Image 1: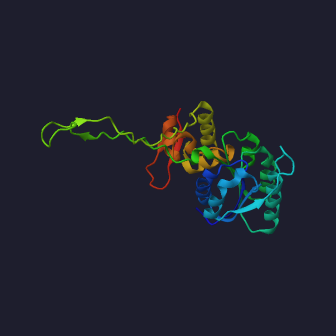
Image 2: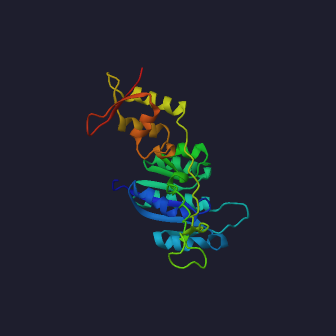
Length: 264
């Protein structure tokens, strides 16, 4: 993590309150959040679950009335504030939390001004918004890993009316003390398109011997595909994902830099 100053702008109409902690933890890996604002119609009963979350994370709510039914006024309010911050505040990056394609032009405009743009939204986010960001993270991969359900506890007791030591213990029906099952996270498949993207990138990043630094390859892949994230495929780090592809030679003899090369 570095000391980049980040403005986080959240569209409350597009994000559930339960995701905010995971979102803020993710943003913290990119730098320091100096501005945290969330936009919505806070007079609406549907926003009642937000109060505790906003206080906990010190996020400033910005009121935007829904003047016309069916029209999303939040978009305009967020865009106006983003442009004000761009020209008046000292920030290095913007994080736009939404799955709404209406922010595509905003993301492009911020990048034109030399700012890094981090997008966070659901997998249903339209491709134009994803492509307009430097980095795009899916909300789905920010969920904590599924925890296995606890096995039912079996309590052994003596037969009814038996004296101590009279009979061997018998099993009663298991007490139901299971925890709710967490839905298993679905990961993207490592397909030919991803492998080809990596092979082409290795060709571009390699020296005359064909070897390329893995870190450089990962950075270049990210610039070509903003929503690339090893967590989308079930891996925390890049090297295990590359090994899983089984189409690269790997040299990790250097403790500091790992190199990869396309297999013939």
